[in-house]
Amino acid sequence: MPISVRQVIILSLVPPSILLSGCSSGALPVKATVTTIDRTCEIIETITHEVDDPRAPGHKLKAQESNSMTGECDSVEEWAEVKSKRSKKVAGTAKVHVDYQAPQDGRYHSATLNFTGRDDEFYTLRAGDSVDILVAKDNPDKIRKA
Image 1 (tube, rainbow, N blue to C red):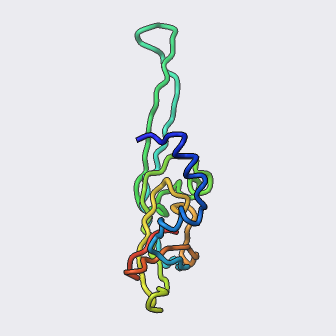
Image 2: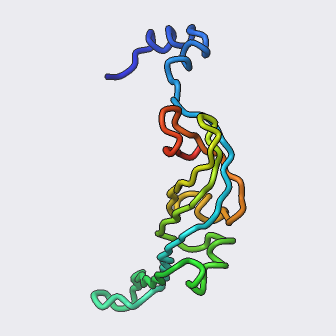
């Protein structure tokens, strides 16, 4: 249902604290430490070049050629360049294993965050880094990225 102009005006008159009070996340912010990362990459390189058009002599067509390299990111030879320059498309996943102390029980827990090649963390996180997470109030083993 589209929002009418009147509805927008009414919402803008409500103080932000009231609007946000109904959006409780049910989670507590915590700092976690990255212990290990399992990254799998498919680095896709697309090369475009011109070729002669067989249907029209003297005309050119643009042709694309794709090459891909798949494996554990650190073992793919172009990973260092792609990681720093982000010059090629990367399809992949990173399972980031973290340790954190849950505020609910004061105990240490381990969990996993998942990232894809679209996330900055996929490229930048390293073992030993600190990362902000949210721990579910009702289950200290359930986390998500802050």
